[in-house]
Length: 295
Image 1 (cartoon, rainbow, N blue to C red):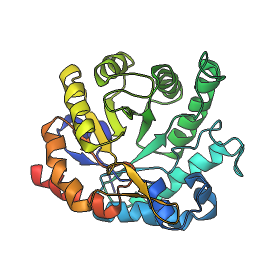
Image 2 (cartoon, one colour; image 1 turned 180 degrees about the vertical axis):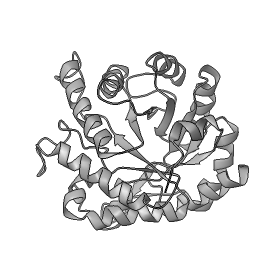
Image 3 (cartoon, rainbow, N blue to C red; image 1 turned 180 degrees about the horizontal axis):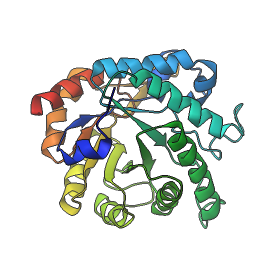
């Protein structure tokens, strides 16, 4: 099937629906606690494939690869250490397989490295750049349609990720920050500051994902829209997690409650919407229905 590209769809003014959570949904499907979703790319690929298909059936226009923690640095100390290229390429193959014969696009998910850069941590900018470049190249060569650098909190690390992606790929780039301190990232970055800096780094879409409450993320969306003209990506959590008696996280917001707010995200200026932690295919269905009603 011939697909309309991501940038063409954005330029046409299309409202797009991304997918929901990876980690929390895989935990609900049996992923052992403490094991990364990337392990299932190798060990349980049918589970990854089914989650992608469930999101597509719920209305997703964009599916993210299960590679949030798929960098070589993030995989250190795991059973798949040293296999970052293989993991990313296989994850892209699974997402592309799920989207075959549909108009849906595949975004290569690139999460933070899990370490602080110097001088606050031990990681050098050069090490961060090399790790991000390796992951971005593997995803790009495997055929994804766009790169999604997500859940960032440190401007220096995000800069390394974006510059690395630009150095190895010509794909569109989404750069998304998590404001897990309410209206600031863990490193104190505001949406307005992030918007200005990311625009200068020549990304194609600026985003907000994860975070805390829908209300705080909506306020951050309003602030970001005031300072940027680029399309906005918006994937908030389904609220804050609680823990059940087995130690598994769960989220209080129902699919209906999340869907009821999705039209407001579009009204506030988001062009691509979905959900992060706690967002099941049922949540995503309600979000998609609300967005499609706005078209």
